[in-house]
Length: 635
Image (cartoon, one colour):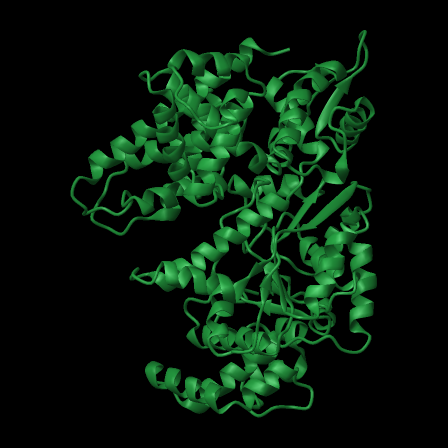
């Protein structure tokens, strides 16, 4: 059943989803009570008793030309669809089922982090926006919260997971089912906004996916703003609430569902979630797949940060929407900072970089400079693993062979490992879980490549290039404000030239060339090439797009990008098939839209589209320079 449909669903589906009484109410056999019922959760009862909420429903009924009584009944139905509690034995029953569901992984949480959160939990409501790499995340985060003595959180979950009969158990275990596509259901949007606001007034702990859906590439997706906007709006009326955003990073050593997600990124149809799907998903977790690392990022006091941003943006006509956007981006940046590098990620990075079979010694030689860089930059490593330890790397290689991601051959003098047939996208997914740690390094390398080809003022050229790349890639990666970004670039330069550590000074193109030739690791081609190749496809198709004075047809355009991308991959115009992905095309198209390159009718659009294509091609050429330098250094 489409959860966003305004049509009556089948009787069987209604019975499954909401029970016999709710089904009869939907078909008009029974009226939906608009007064609180004894079984209603607190937030539902409070809103149904609220004169202010009733007034808002009357206003929207008037604007829609509908009977207020029908709108109130519709809203009451939505409230009871959303309504959740932590009552009875349901949380314990769900805890047992969730342990079975997540039995493939061992959860690792820092006890010192949870100790600090317990203290904060006594003073504030805690908001847990989490990264989303698996269906298991919605199980893992609330379990990590409640099992560590923190007030159980309410989980805002997609209505696609509202699967009978577990939906009833989950509602009584704090799961709030939220529909996704609600543009044509204004009463639902108003009701959801009111429900979230009531939860904030009641000082509930909440958790939700900041990305809105699972990543198909392994890296953090652009944030969605809906829930965060509702929370921020609620603070205007919830005067006593002092919520604290606690970013949550979740990263797995391996996942059963990665190959399915990479297929979806290439345009395959996502299978709808139902009881059969849930059973099959649970059975797939029988094989042990290592650890899942859950880390809490630096907390963000929401009310205090809102005041700062509103003061900073008070002259901006779009101040409120920009405030929400800034809070979301800061949250994602903090999630990335908390996300540790797994041994799986660096091993996959090493083998993807080689594009051939490697011995254990060769893998270690490739990983060593990465490990040194990660240590120099103070980035966290999952489980505090030693990335240069022979036994640790060997164990990871063998684990990846068992899961089919890698293949090994031991018939010669030494065992060698390579990416398994058809597994490049899966390996890239694991590599991308650590891409946030390397993106600053990659941008710094391209800044030096620009300086190497520029005039005598290498520092100025490099700074200009890194800022351009920050702007180019801002819809794919999460960057700090410009001043902090400049500090990050200075730290990168100090690694390749320790003489810059005491303060930046001018350097020549020859200096930039020498630093790149001597520097390890070189990662721009490994980190940025897949994204820039996808940008190249989008820019090329946009430059060739024939405007016919009709609104831009995004689905048709993206389908053309997929088809042309597959052709380019076969012709080796792209470095890998990884770039043929809707997940990578969409941020590139979003950038083009941001630059007013999508809609026709704007003077000079055709020329600016060609300029955009040339900018991308020029950036790819610089990446190729780094790739060539890396090949000269290959073990």
